Length: 296
Ligand code: ZN
Ligand code: FE
Ligand code: FE
Image (cartoon, rainbow, N blue to C red; front, side, top):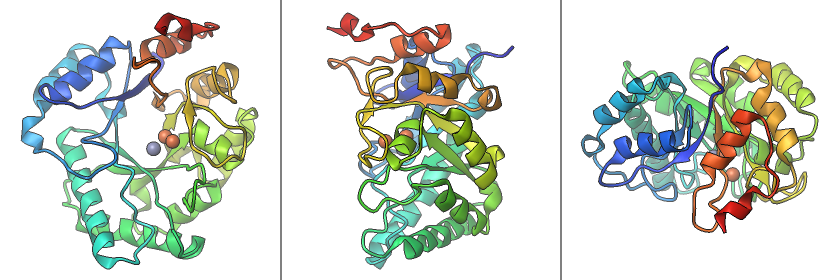
């Protein structure tokens, strides 16, 4: 039986960069992880040569971490869905293209992307803009680049797209590069979008029917501060939100999802990362009531 593939988002900071990222993940007992190549809320990126990638990869290897399951998250300010400002839209595409090249430099195979928000263009035009943008990006990517994009299921805040399996399937099926597109399922987001998170089996069956389970590349395991259908996208710590440990653990332990990396994006508690405790609970499959008390 292989190990549970569970981790969290970790930072990439000076001076140790990727080496520090890997060390941080290991300190939580993570068996996989996700990171941003720079600040998630902006598109400023440092030179990849500074990032101690070889040292980080050595440490991964020494610890038996499966590199093919590690995930990069694109910054969430980049919007491919709205092309009202042509200049801004071209810059967004160029940024995503360069981000895919950075992923390859880390030898990371999957990049999670928020599909975008149509703002005022309407759902259909927004979705078509995303499809066309992704086509352009993959068309212009060097041939040796094999990085895939996992479109994240979104909560439906504002005019966000990717709020249903149908929308995600529409983007994938109309892409020229279907083989390069997959999905990141976020438990907080789908609950906020209106799915009944307590019926995990139904969600997975529906996902399989509409998108295909082979397309599921990443799972974001987050509790939600808000009830079903709230469209808020506010993550909560495991067991402290409207979803709860039991519902989340069904996603973590579903045999059909065994080989898919599960990533926590839960908030810090009193300024401290909660991930060692949250990961441990899943590893032991036991919820520790009032676990936050140890962070006070
Ligand atoms: Zn995300
Ligand atoms: Fe997420
Ligand atoms: Fe979120």
